[in-house]
Length: 156
Image (tube, rainbow, N blue to C red; front, side, top):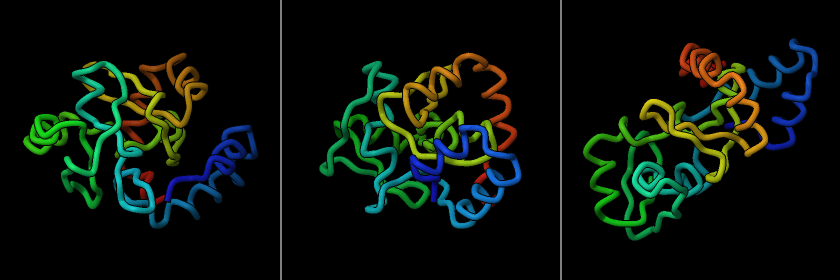
């Protein structure tokens, strides 16, 4: 499971590395490959395709879903669902929808729909707009670190 908001803030606030690593490792033992809620809905029910086509987060609906990587993905329309289903890797957020900043640091954390950015055709989500700004300060290095850490952060 991803770190809770409290654990994420504590871990990212500068605790000693050993303590942060122990916390992240313990939590990551059973981390699923996609960030989802307790009902198994991916990325807070946001329509992954809409980030690209509408340029903003759009809430998906239970009427238009697709199952992929153990999660239910919701969409605002049948067209977006079908587009995603034809090539999920092209539309799904990087790092399974986990926080790009956290993955660049070596662990996972939840995300919010409003903290997003498309870079070179790839969708990245973050824990909050505050952490998105931190990620953007050194975005290229953060992406390289995240790519290097993914998917090993899922197993600790």
